[in-house]
Every structure is written in structure tokens, then in C-alpha cells.
Image (cartoon, rainbow, N blue to C red):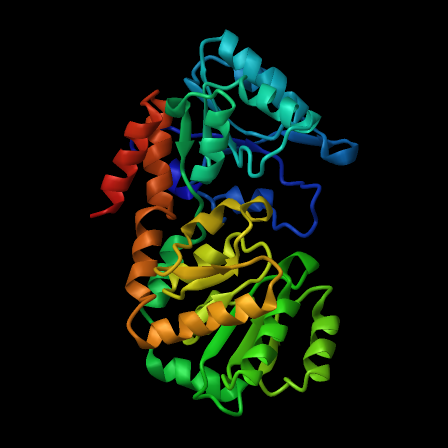
Length: 380
């Protein structure tokens, strides 16, 4: 958002509330947008969120904003549960404004009533800003024009992370391994994220045991906390893997997360990987996750098997162990290089690419031209 608001081609105003219906998600405060706040360069105005049961939202003020003179385009979060967006999009279209929805789109093959409503909702817009190519293809299969579907991918705090990766040294990585493991010379696997059932970290513990039986010893560093931690620690103990699997707990400093990522040979999330794929690859670490796109998030597309990581057969511990072994052997043979992971992130999964494509989407440039423009700009 900061990158977009610094655009020389667009003058952006952000309308939002500071209250969310998901307490686990970080949110802003009004002070963040003040003269001394971390988002002070963003033009922000508050509107009121009225949350209803089942995640339904009415945003007070959206109707007036959508019809207000002076705006050429309105970008809505493309969530069909946000009832005010349905009416706001119609008002914006009636008053001759371009309407874009920023959304996941379709992330799995669905044919139920919810999918029908979602597709109907998307038709209210002039175009969709999507996180991945698969969503684009699925919408094209539903009759949407290719040129109205803009893939902008996703990003994290890219500039901070690029600066941090330049500070990482072999000495720092070796020191972390020595602190965490009794045999720091062994290959190291890292897993970063909240320890919930959807991440399937138990499969990683089991895969480490399978590799031990194959004569391949690895160290596993689990970064994060969550409701599954006690069960995972118990599983580790029951398999006599406590020297090999270390739980680091929550880490709040990005520098510490960066070091864990860079020190590792590979990052593994056996369940839905989401932004962890982008996080790891920004630091040059290849990624392994499962192969079922219907149970993944769009960031899964950044993993190119044999290049920036591997995918294993969903739920198959033996195959996960094999893919870890393949990655570790490949790193020794010069494949899965850090520079290749960096290139994918630096070319697509960064705020500059997003800004470039959104600027062109707002201006009505066809999606294929906008995406090529963003790619060309980030290739230099």
C-alpha cells in the first residue's frame, strides 16, 4: 500500500476502519496514519465497519465515497460478504468510475451456490486484481475476459527483507546452527508459521524420522507458536527426535526470522504454505509443500519444481522425505540456487510489480500489456 500511495501516476486515498473481525490478524490504529505514525505518508480516512454474523460486513460511508466526484477509479476488496461493496460498485459504475476488485478470485474448482454468487459479484467490476495465474485461468473458464484479469501476485515487506538478506553472513548462520543443534553440521530444514492443524507440521517430523531410517540425518528448526505446539513436541519426543527437531517459538524480530531462513538448506511447510513461500524465497531458500492446488493459496505458484523448490504428494510422508532428500542433494550439486529464488521474487512478488500493474489497470490498459509492463520494469 505504501508503494501504491507513492505512485507518481496515481493520487490514492485509502478508506478503512481499524477494527477487524479476525483478532489473530494484525490491524492498524488511527495513530499509525498520524504525523508521527509509520504510515504517515498514506492519505487515509476512516469509515465505520459494522460486522454482522458469518463474516458479513457493511461499511458505512461506502455509498457516498463511490459516487463522490473527483475519483476516477474505486478499488474494493473483492469479498462478496461485504454487502456495501455490492451497492458501492454499482454506484461507482453509474457515476462513470472504473471499478476494480482486489481479490483471490477462485482458488479451487467449485460449482456450489457460493461460487455462483462469487462469480456474479465479480461481474460488477471492470476488472479483477488477482494473486495468481490459476485464479485467472479458472475465471477465464467461467467466461471472464483475459484482458480484465490482472495478476498482481502478492508481497511482504520486500524492501526491508532485501536489505536484511544483504547483512546475512556464513558466520551468523553457523552460529545459529550451533546454538540450536548438537550436530550443527547436518543439513537444516526450517518451517516458519503459526502452528495450526492446516500447516501439517507433524508430517515434517515424521519425514525426518523416515530420513533417519534411510540413513539421512537432518536438523529441523520450527519457528512459530500456536495451538498445535504441545502435540507436535509430544510427537517429537515419542519418536526420539528431540535432538533433531527444535521448536524456537514465536520470533517477532524480522532479522531473526531472516537468519533462520538463510541458515536453512530448505524451507518445508507440508500443509497450505501461503506467504511463507514468498518469505523463504525472498531470502533465497527453496521451498517444499504439497501438490494439491485446491488446498493451497496462490503463493504456491512461486514454487517451480526443480528450480525454486519441490512439491510432494499431499499427505504422503515417504514422498515428502524423498523431496527433502532431492532438495538437499540438489543444493550440494548446485541446483536450487539462492539467486534463482531471488529472481522470481524480484521479478514478480514485490510491491513495485504490483504498483506497475495496478497503475495500468486503473488506466484501463489490457491485462496482458499491464503484466508484461510490470515484468519488464522489474527485470532491470
